[in-house]
Length: 382
Image 1 (tube, rainbow, N blue to C red):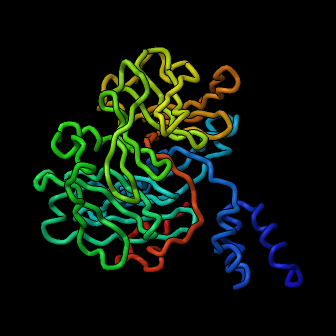
Image 2 (tube, one colour):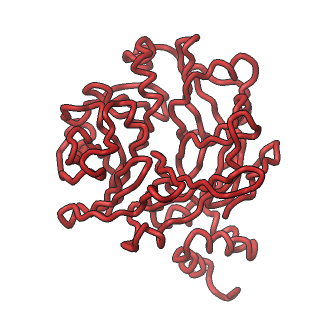
């Protein structure tokens, strides 16, 4: 093997799954250099989109919570067992017991957890790394009313958390960068205040929705007719038109094949799938109409608050996954929206989340320093 050119070794390693690449990187320094090089990671196939499913497991002294990823392009096997993969497992302790771990968000293959008292943890299940965001000290730990978005700021290489303080009537950002001991308050100007900061009723709705990251922006589902947009580089707000739906409060945004898509659950038995074909012009086109993933509308969100339990994702192969916290269904829109069930939690202790996960092998700088506390779930990967 040592006689093979490095580019040949890289070509071989590119064909391996992530778990095997990580093991190969531990074999020697040369393979470690290859598997961590930016051009090697960029050459790997894009990670498949998955929905995170939570499962209660027996354990002592507390039950354990397992997070599994169910890919959109799951196999045709019943319940998607061939495609499902375990991400992490940890004790499911009650809220008043420390440490309690609550999944908040997913971004760039990294999961964000809250453990209370202003403590946030980052986890990359693929590389099996944990990191800790700067703890919020003093008054800031009590001022966070809602965590709105978790995003990756590419110019700085930092993961950032956008929060809201009702008392300050302002947005502020918590980041993983060095010297970020205190949150940074976003300046209130015309770009950062298109009606959001002054209309906190609408901001409460935004806190329950998971934004979609695309083209360097975060997109929240429409409250009325427009979509709120947050530029992750300049950290400013703007607005763009949403799909022409008669029930905008029942629209779920997701990413599908590099395009912003929307699932409109306005009708009881049908779901309209819209795609933003021209991002700059705000041109939405209804491409498909599929059967509701819920039997005769049972479980269908009746209002905007019910949309927080809705899961949706797509891939570039014509598959769309829809569902709620009780189950998931995959639609193949290339074949007249043929549908198959991949998760049915009626007889299981499962809960479908509304978080989309895409695995990543990138070793971000924030994972170089281990967490200060050796939490009980830190090594539970199976």
